[in-house]
Image (cartoon, rainbow over the protein chains, first blue to last red):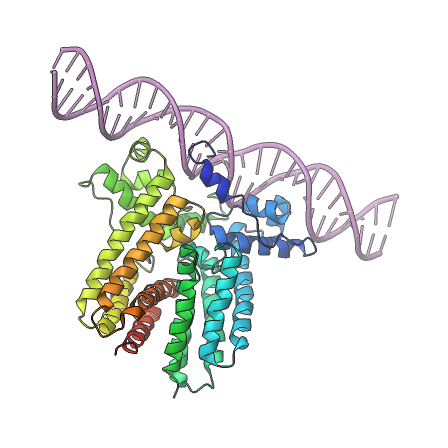
Amino acid sequence: MCNERSNQYCGEMNDTTLPAQADPALGTRERLVRTTSRLMQRQGYEGTGIKQISREAGVALSSVYHFFPSGKQELAAEAVRHADLEFAGILREALTAEADPAEAMIACTRILATYLRDSDWLDGCPITATALETSGRVPDIHQAVVDAFAHWRELVAEKLRGTGIAEDDIPDLAHTVINTLEGAELAAQVSRSEQPLEIAGRHLARLIDSYRG
Amino acid sequence: MCNERSNQYCGEMNDTTLPAQADPALGTRERLVRTTSRLMQRQGYEGTGIKQISREAGVALSSVYHFFPSGKQELAAEAVRHADLEFAGILREALTAEADPAEAMIACTRILATYLRDSDWLDGCPITATALETSGRVPDIHQAVVDAFAHWRELVAEKLRGTGIAEDDIPDLAHTVINTLEGAELAAQVSRSEQPLEIAGRHLARLIDSYRG
DNA sequence: GGTTCTCTGTAACGAACGTTCTAACCAGAA
DNA sequence: TTCTGGTTAGAACGTTCGTTACAGAGAACC
């Protein structure tokens, strides 16, 4: 594979330096989950190998199958659940930064843009790539993805409650907020620019304001 | 790989029946590109193998390297360009279905929802999975993805011109329209429901109307 | 000291990966 | 007919894939 024809590909594809190198103070199992989550964020499910995970986590290959007896799918599903919680933390922090819900949208897009830029436009949504590759084909992972999206929508819905928006409009707005953030983050990653996220923040703020009584 | 532990995975992962089986009337090269595009739409770049492509296209493996001497990356980049044009056709058709730009948004989401449902929620945006896996790592494919997104945004921008929206607002609106469609399609695919797209249509229509003078 | 249980180091399995090579095939032109 | 150019069939290359097996390290408990 790594011959003269595909050298640039191999050279760039696997020599990724993880932003947070696996912390040896963490438990072995936890280190595996975090490393898997970070690798799948960048390379997707099919692009991330078990051996690469064990290598970068500093964990023996046999240990992977000790902690996750049914193999890659089980580890990947756990990694998606970890990413769910981690991203929820970022989202919650951004949403509470501003009291006004419309202002909070702009804070969200700013935080996501900062994470993206700081990772040289590599760390977008941690589960999108995995979600697409496994959608409808690997039930355990698919379910973890469904749960994560529902979780994030609920965080947005909570923020919108009690701000003058009719209760009936809130679930739909939460849907569009998460989906637009998702799409804008993808566009920002591909275009290596904060612009799509900045635009999305402004438009989401305007949309939310238009629903306030 | 296909042992008792991962049987469900293998069973569902590669026995996909393509919606449009490779048309033998097409040229060999064209058949390769279309098959690659369809497979990468569902399985992503890393999840799609050259041998699977040649098998499903009914083309000799050696022919792949005859038509695409630099291998998988070249074929994948061409497949992204093909998907660009194909999706642009769908988008153009949807946008011209309604004269009013806000109504056209709803027509767009309806058409995308129909395509999704008819493929049992497997055929979402044809390039998103590939875009994420290769973003910033495989320059040729990355460029094709950037071009495709720009192309689709321009189609939306054209639709918005001359409808009472200030020229300065149009590029930003086109960004958010494409990005929201992208995110909503992902959500619809994962949740196996038209609801996210239906909601996105309504909210995009409202957003656009709010910009009309 | 022994016993038990958890975890790891090492090696190997068959299969699939992307790629390369060469001998043939088969049209149309000479 | 022979030649030629584009296309293919088939086998093989070395590497990586996910997974399995097993012996041994290491601490904890009796």
